[in-house]
Each structure stands twice: as C-alpha cells, then as structure tokens.
Image (cartoon, rainbow, N blue to C red; front, side, top):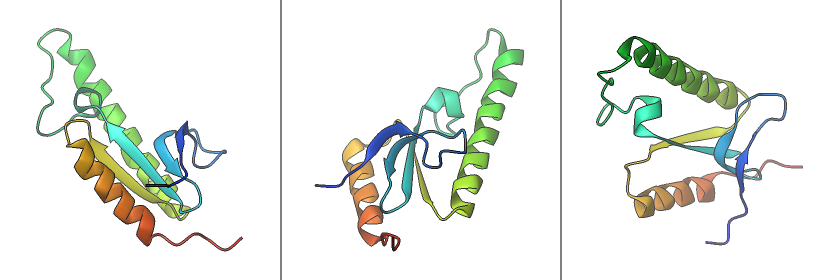
Length: 107
C-alpha cells in the first residue's frame, strides 16, 4: 500500500515499549498479541500444569499491555491492538484505514 513503517521498534526511545509495527510519521503503533501470551478471552486457557505460575504471568503481561497503551496514548500515539487469530487481510485493512486518517504532525 506504499506506507513507510518500522518493525519491532520503540515508538518512543525513552520508553521500554516495543511495538510490532510503527508508522512513525502518522504516530501509529500496532501490536499483534499472541492468544496464549496475552490472555485472549476467546482462546486462552490456563495450562493444567504449573497453573500457579501461568495465571499471574499472563495477568502481568496484560497489565504491561495496558501500561503500554496508556503511555503511548498520553504522548499522542494511536495504539492499535489485534489478536493473532484475527484474519490478516482484515487487520491490514483496518490498520491502513487508521494510518490514512491519521495526520502527520507538523515538523
């Protein structure tokens, strides 16, 4: 689609948050979350072995996700989150629509 983007980078250098896809000019950060690692409400199931570890671990990941959204949003970023099970073509179209409607900040 001709967009310029970066992969697996920090949208803000001073934050230890890495986004999967970053459209720097439009200030759009995209995260694609794995169903297991981020506690997908549709697919995540606590493992039967070592569940006392995995439950808190996944909740910690979700808390980190919420923090990332809040931190980037407060700095003027549009943050988009998708699940790994979502159809790639639909996700790509949704991202493209958001990127197209975001205005590049004046430099």
